[in-house]
Length: 191
Image 1 (tube, rainbow, N blue to C red):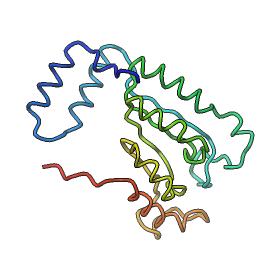
Image 2 (image 1 turned 30 degrees about the vertical axis):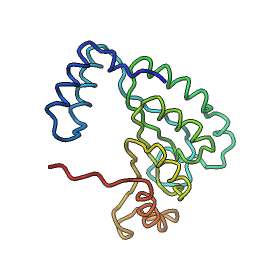
Image 3 (image 1 turned 90 degrees about the vertical axis):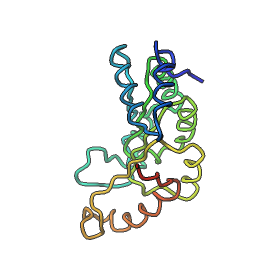
């Protein structure tokens, strides 16, 4: 496993010890600010984005990523999980801490967990962008084994009445609302 760069920074142990001693909550914001500050000083990339696919199972009119899920040509041009992992190792070695996995729809990749699971073991804070329509109980259970730091589900309205009118959308809103609760744990309110 790669050792995160911030643990190698001069003064990290004393900053971490002092912050943890003073903190009465598990406030994540000061840590993130400090990581970004130190990474800027060292000119190290702390954030990364991997667009895993251009394919999507929806056909949203406003979206630029709309290649068909069955598009063999697009699928053939996608990097393999091994190639993404090699890139991730290089990025982690050079300071990346936060990684966004996006697409298209990331869950269209049959090798998604061949990539996702090792990424979580590298110590990365992984964020997933998804439309949520492919999240099943089985997929949610796999995600729960190593939950992402954040999951953003694309919604274009809070209710069926305000949701983007399209043949693909009417069934999405209730399914997505249910799917998002399958692996997420409510966070306690801040004091």
